[in-house]
Length: 134
Image (cartoon, rainbow, N blue to C red):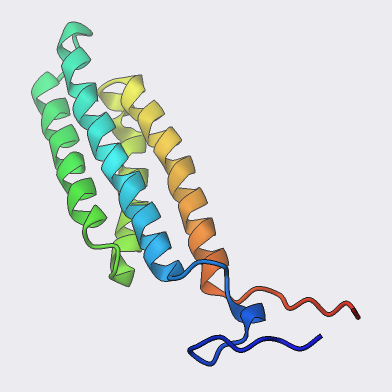
């Protein structure tokens, strides 16, 4: 079976099925970081009611991490932003010092980020060609 050439010269066997896989991955990464920023902002409200020790420091750390997530969401075109996103996920883990729920948020979004990195890796390489005779 012959591969059909598409308009830009690639054959259909080397395409991922997405029009622009790099853009799709950037959008996925930005979406994860944006959702994380929203969740972190929502975590601020119950912190006062839970009588979190060192509330001022906890709020400051959460606001800094939120700002970092927002900035990185807009920078996913740059390769370093993906490494910084991983560091951001890991930075949430020691927030157990303030309250365990911040670490739980960090674990959930670390899992989502690792999956995003996996999708990025898979979409960055061409798919395996079908070699079955047909």
